[in-house]
Image 1: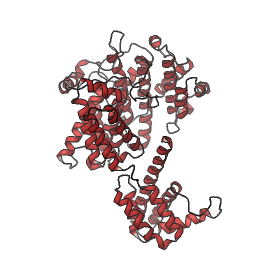
Image 2: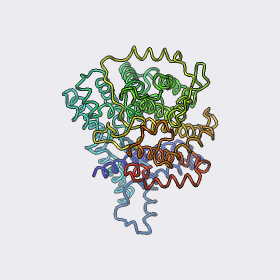
Image 3: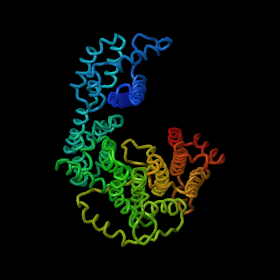
Image 4: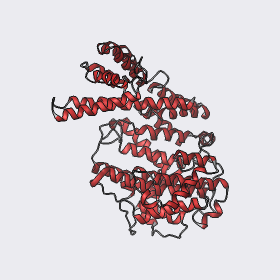
Length: 553
C-alpha cells in the first residue's frame, strides 16, 4: 500500500511538471508573430508537450484502448483543447500545476473548467475534468498539511516526545520525495530552520541521545536538502537579492548549521544532505544565471568548505589508538567531499593555494585513491599553516551546547537502513571509509564529465585523465574479483566479516554501473570483456541486500 501511494504521488508530480511545461510553451508560442516560422515551430513544440500531458493523464472516457480510432479521437480532443480561445482555461490550469496551490484554487478549477470547456464537446469536457482531478492536490497532501506536520513535530520535541516528532518528520519526508515544493514555502522553511537550530544547540544530554536514537537531525537535513531545490529565487541566498532582514537571518542561521554538520559533528548522511542544501541555496533551479556568475557563486561558497575538509586534521586514515567516535569522523568528511564533488565540480577542480601544486579536490582524490584504497604512504605536502586560520575560526564559533552525532551512517544512498534510520550495524569504520572514498572518486568523474558537456565550450572543466579513470575501473574490479576484499593489504585485517565484504562488493558494483552510464561514454574504452563478466556475476551476489542494490542500480 505504501509503494502504491508513493507511485501515485510520483505520477501526480510528473503530471504537474508536464502541465507546467506545456503552459509555458503555449505562452511562448502565443508570443510569437502570427504566421511566422517561429510561431509554427513553437506551436508544434507546445503540442508535443500537450501530448506528454495526455500520456500521463487518464484515457478518454467511453473509448476502449483497443479501438483503432482512439488515437485520432485523442488527437482531435487535444487539438480543440490547444486552440481554445478562452484564456481563463489555461490560467485556471496554471494555478493547479504547482503542488503549493490552495484548496480554493482546487475548488475553483473543479467548478470553472467544466463550464468553460463545454463548447469543445462532452469528451473534451470529461478529459479536462479528469486532468484537473489528477493534477490537483487533495485534502490529505498539500502545503497546509505539511506546515502543520512540521509545527506538530516541533511541539512534540518541545514536549520531550522525540518518537512522535520523528513520525511527523517522516511523513513530511515521504511527501516531499514527490513534491519538494511543499516544504519550500516561506513558513515551512522558516520552521524547519528554527527546528534545526534548536535541536543542534539548545538540548540536554538526555535529549541528545533521543535525537540520535530517532534520527531527528538526519530527517530535518534530508527535508531541507530536498526542499531547498524548490525555493523561489527571491527567497534564496539572503544578501543581495532584495530579501527582508528575517529572510537573511534565516539563511545565515541555516548556512552556519549546515557548515557545522559538514565539518564538525554530522553523520555521513547529514554531511551529504548539508552540502546538497547549500548547493541549492547558492544556485537555485529557479534562478537562471550565466555560467560565469554561477561558477563564481559556487567557488565562493564551496572552496573554503573544501579547504577545511581536506585539512590534515580531518583527512587522515584513523589509527587503532583512536576512539570509535573519532575514527568514524573520516567517513563523514569523505561523504561531504563526495557531495561537493557532485554538486560543485568547478569548486572541486579549481586551483589550490599554498606551496603545493595540488588543488583541494586533487588532494581529496589522492587521499581517497592512493592512501585509502591502494594503501600507499602518500604525502600531499599539506601544511598546517595553510589551514590554521580556518581551524581557529571554526573552534571559536562552535557552540558549547551542541551534541556530537555518532557517524554510524553508511556513505552510499543505496545502503540498507535500520528500522530507526540512523544506525548501520556490523559494518566496520574502515569498510565505510573505503566505500566513502569510492564515492569521492565516482562523484568527481561523473560530475566533471556531465557538467563539462552540459556547459559546452564555455566550460573550464577538464575531463579526468584516461589513466586516472582506468585506475579507478581496475581498483573496483579488483574488489569484485577478490570477493569483497579491500584492494590494499593494510585494510584486509579490518574488513574480514561477511557484512564488510558484502558491503564492499555492493559499493564497487553499483559504482561501476554508475561509471557505465551512457552519458559518460566510458564503458567502451575502459570496461573490458573480462571486467564485464566479473561485474555481471554480482547480479547473483549471495548477499540479498547487495544483490538488490546492484539490480536496482
